[in-house]
Length: 271
Image (cartoon, rainbow, N blue to C red; front, side):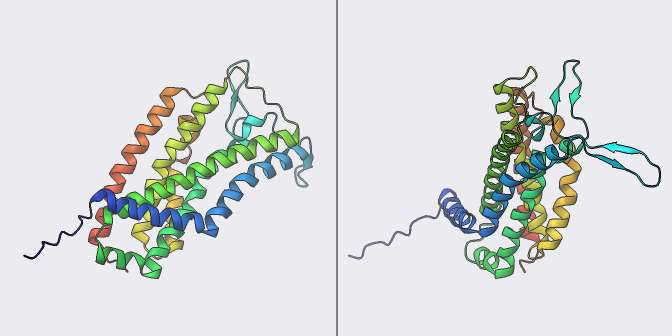
């Protein structure tokens, strides 16, 4: 009597685990990943130290004779966001530190995502993968999670670099009425908000396919539409509500744009 041969069922969870294993292995072996993490650590140190050294420097416009005094950071937390002052106003305002802070990481992560995805189409890996398994939804989820982990690590290392830069420059760590809990919620909100930007970058990268330059330009343009809102949504004085709202927004964007990314893969050529 012949025995029936049972083939193992390749379920969604097994496909996703396999895809995640491949993508995370590629990510942690990628030089680009470690370069971006190193940049996230070093950039705040360089900005804080250089701005502190230039504090009080006077420059004169040769045409008008107007003098401009360079103002350096007063507090280590200015690399993360603006601190409230005694009168309730924002400390720092729209100065250099107000623009060149941790929020830059939301735009820098697009470099990793765009190059990571474009390599799949350039090498033919994506076409081979979809021909054999047709796991386009798994592909989108895996790339979104990989980009989210990369972005979250960049935010964490930037925070570490900001604290190191403040310590090296001898800046104050006074929180002006805020607490460590507010800082923790601020970082959690920023990490959750990273999902919104990652979902946008994945969609644009999939639409651009092997053209990394196009996906990077499109991602920077698309990300800038929301970039100015980051400081308002994730202030230093964040609470649990900020973190929950960012998590909800991140999940909504990840799911909705994830379906859009899958639709793009279904309706366009894979080369």
